[in-house]
Image 1 (tube, rainbow, N blue to C red):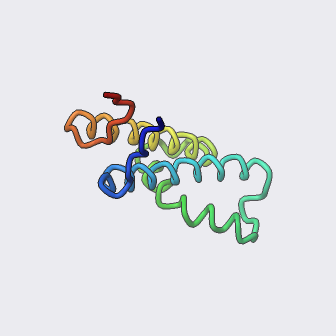
Image 2 (cartoon, helix red, strand yellow):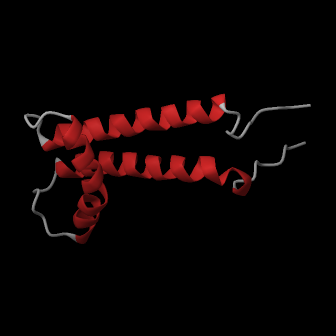
Length: 106
């Protein structure tokens, strides 16, 4: 028989931050890819949304990285930092026993 799916609500403290970090990471990647095709001052609403959502992350990454690095590379570094943050968050939750457990069969 099929095992029941893990409910999300009891593990909101795990899923919510992980979801936000993943969304920011993929939005940075989307801005990087879209930025290769459009001008930086393009006035399209989708581009403005990408810029608005990712600018806080870019500012934090800019603080860490040298100013000599161009914006496209800062976007890549931002995605990598967020990926490392997600992995670190996951490992911390697992080490404290707070992550959802999957694949257990009786």
